[in-house]
Length: 209
Image (cartoon, rainbow, N blue to C red; front, side, top):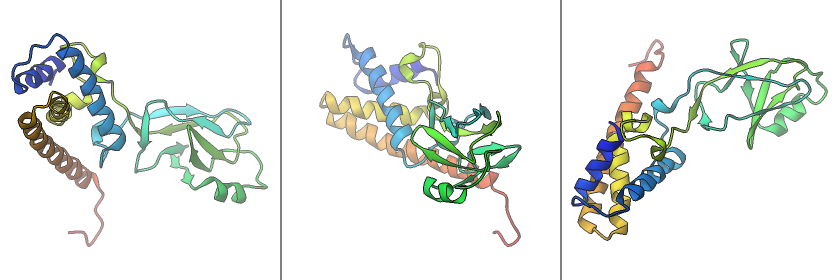
């Protein structure tokens, strides 16, 4: 659903508001709604999964910067080298395990702050591949006729969450209640679709129902 349609529906459901700053307020609240869903949501939806990305190591440097738009690692494994996933452990464990190891191709890593820390320390430039859940373009950056991933796959959720926030601040209790009900329905709908996709994409083993 394109941005202008969502903005128009929010205005209409708030009583056809024509405040001079209403578009700016909706833009800001759309951004905040998306931020909350990405950073604090109970699940991270499938549509935020990135394409395969390549990161190159630096000789003598165990750190590789995390992509600036990364929300979290992909459950199926984060970093791969030569097509195989690197083992992930905490830094204390890896520091002890590789204490006397010579530098060489990456075998394992730890996620520390804004960096992946590789073990052992690379002795050459090695290409690492990864997929990850990434932040989406914020609604305020979109033209009226554009849509981002949230507007494409979860416009009802973003709309309802934004509408509830605005209704709260303009003290429209009835509208806030209705938006909150819509938000719950939209959240449940997307979660059902998310888990269904995950189930369909899961490899079944003998004995599974």
